[in-house]
Each structure stands twice: as C-alpha cells, then as structure tokens.
Length: 145
Image (cartoon, rainbow, N blue to C red; front, side, top):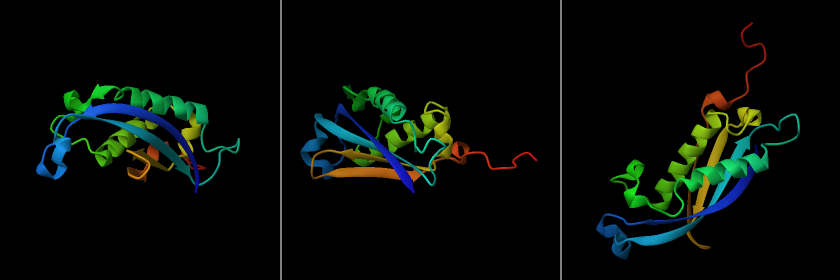
C-alpha cells in the first residue's frame, strides 16, 4: 500500500463535560499538529499517490473551518466532547467528503483509505483511519460492457 501524508496545524478552544476530564472541563486551548495520510494500492500513471500541493490545500481548507474557533460554539459539535479522537474522526469525515466531491482531482479515484492523526504534544496523539467509499475507487476495466 502506497501512502502520502501532508501536515498542517490548527488552534482551537474547547471544554469537556464529565468528571473524567478534571480541569479540562473548563475552557482551554489546544494546538494540534494534523497529519492526513492518503493510501492507495497502486500509483497513478505519473507515479504518484496524489498531488501533494492539492492535498495540502484541501487539508488547509478543512482545518480553516475549525482554526481559531471555540468548538463549544460550533453547531456541528453541540453536546459532544471534542476530544482528540473525536476531532480526528471529524476531520476524516470532512476530508472524505471533499475527496468524494472531486476536490483532490482525478488522482483521488485511486484512493482506498485515509488516516488522520492529531498530535496534542510530542508525546500524545490520536488518530482515526478507515476505508474511503467505493465511489473514490477507479472504474473497473470493461465496466458498462
């Protein structure tokens, strides 16, 4: 399996609900280092997984929707503990939507999986990974015959 990873970051504020979180129940900030890894079993005709510049631009666009925001005020996250694990899945879902919408170009048709990793520090991180919908797979030879 081939992979290509692009990296960016985002700064957010949030709070948590529940005694498990101790002092993090109060509003606090976090800066996340975000890695987005695209996977495919074969390279495209140009020998690439994906255009790295386009991948970086789409990741930046997704993170811009969250960057410098208080996630407690975001309607999409209402009532959720926006843990690192939760955010990794949320970014995965938003990236998968953009891939399906064609924002990563024709090369994205060969992508089969995606992994999003958020690092809270140099010693702690969480990730979400999974397959991409079949719609992003390349058409099979002889389809429609």
